[in-house]
Image 1: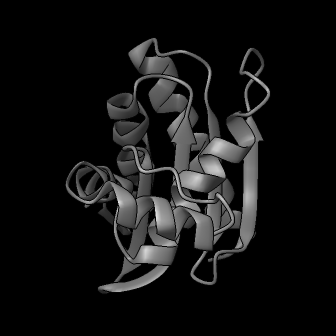
Image 2 (image 1 turned 30 degrees about the vertical axis):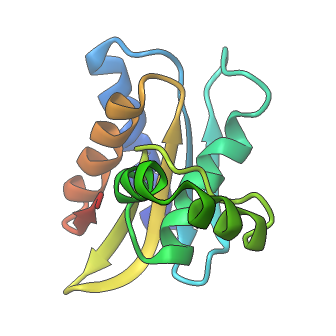
Length: 139
């Protein structure tokens, strides 16, 4: 994961948002170690969106699962997800929109998007990853 790749994915995700007529978004890209590489917040987003986008991506990296799968786990095992969120210092948002980025099956990072519905956030994340020739793993 590098800055150029992260910025290309962010640009594509925001273009997806515009084509869908979705609400303004915040997009975060992190590397496989959970470190922020790039983040963009569109005008009109609320003040917690940067943290939410990072929480979706960081939760996916921390657990090795897309945030859609984390959402499903939260329904079945809420105490487990609550405990893991505490261990992660709150950086785990178990709703769709956090997608692992794979290259030849290996996790190289994650993208987290927030701003519209979780399904739209996730769809734009997947579109961004696919547009740069990598594999999206939403869970």
